[in-house]
Image (cartoon, helix red, strand yellow):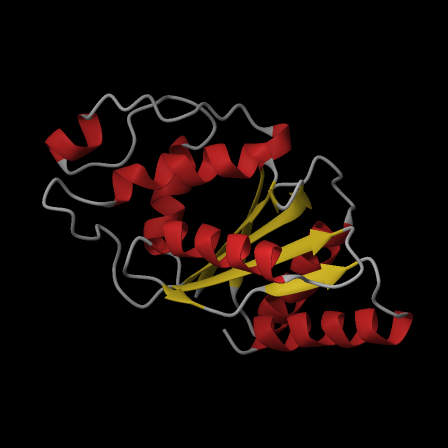
Length: 181
């Protein structure tokens, strides 16, 4: 199976990337093909609301570094996203990335993705413990990306207040999630 991962942090070796990469290690060990996109290194434009996707039941027509992503997403069995929390929400580049998924619903408002793809969100935050507002925002983000046909998993959250043992357990959990895809 193909697993597509999108990393949103400008810190390429940051906490969210570390957890996602551990999950991807598990996916690779299970024999899955892994494709990684690092949004901060890419030229990604925002949705223009041009309507091309709806009028043509097609993927986004914007010619930027996401052009190849759409094909890989359609072929994938899972999408893994990782993002840090900036001011109680995922970072800005990941919001832009999310908005581009507008093209994945038809003009009849039905999903254009094959049903059953898994969607796993990995989030890191400087707060000592996850709090309800941030968790609600992570769930909102995943639901927006799910486009009604993806199977949304419970978010994986790494908090600054975790002990070394808790972080190690989280990394092991991520690895096992990747293996079970």
